Length: 465
Image 1 (cartoon, helix red, strand yellow):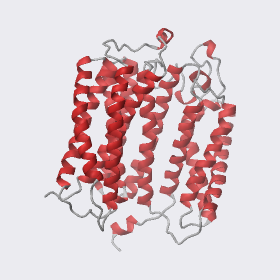
Image 2 (cartoon, one colour):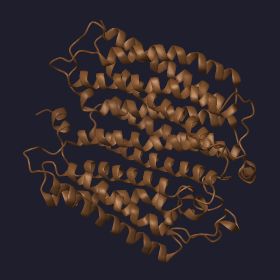
Image 3 (tube, rainbow, N blue to C red):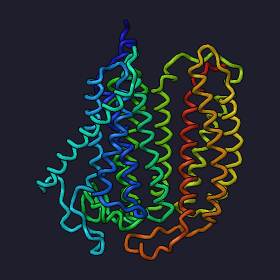
Image 4 (cartoon, rainbow, N blue to C red):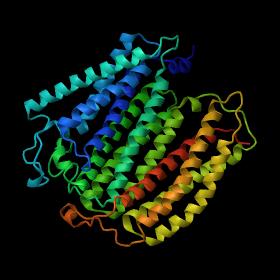
């Protein structure tokens, strides 16, 4: 057995535990942000048990997957370890629930807020949370593993789990983009005056009571926390790719993604401290580029990409041309959209509208050509291409409709001045559907860009004829 074949079938505990742990954490973070939004406003005493219950459910799903080809005890132990990974990742957001809460009427600065190193009771709470998280994961793992029928299936290889971690990183980035879009749509980009801290305190232990007392502060601060989640997820993805992926250029791609995520975080901080519109535009554009690069990395790591080439088809050259052209057009369209959203440049809006018709035509051709690719004997890659083409068709039609709805919600307006933290009280309330529509357009555009990147990666494997 050669080295490549042996590495492709390596099975260890590290990669499935890390992948499952981050998947559990992403599910819990999404629930965390919903439960603590000002419109919901659950207290930590209420949201904490709900989140632990969610962890049991997420761990049950992980346990069901980890039980493949393993004993019941082995699957439970791996799921418990995944719960430990999830608890470590969760501390970046759950720390805001564990610290003493502050009175919002006294101002947004958390006077005397403890840090992780200064308060022994907090250290005890962290240890208790870790143990509760591991126990909850073990319970969920037991349920999930017991639900899976015994079979002769082999456990997934490390490279198959690594591909799942790629999709997990992509899933972690989508809520970050949603929160970023809501932050821009609600004029909340400067709601927190400092960086990397929050109102002079440690951002990871900024009390949830202060965050949830103001929608603008909540959106901006949550956006920062989710940036941390994406940073941790892409760091884990990069390290495990370097350890388990034999293709050197894929390793370099994973490193490049992590470096850009770090640069994106710094750029977002400088946008706040310097109150720079130009950096806001660049921050918005780079966010979606990183999302597209993560989609491409997920494609590179996937079994469909690593498998055999699909049988040639006479329309493969057209598929490659239209998919690649669509991806390039979307990068240009993204820039126009960011210029209008952040700076109010009307000429960018008109360019954005005009280019949308060209993209619609290109996208429909790219999607239809891919969705109608014939299935053959080596059909794994063809099925993936057909699914990606269908996804692009659905998303691009939805995006075209959302674009006109977003224009109705935000008609041309040159003044895009973002209020600072001391001007939040002066923001005029607006109908909730308007920022939601604008954010849906932005987020769906990110999905379209990611889908186009995923499709382009696969169709460019076709032999040139």
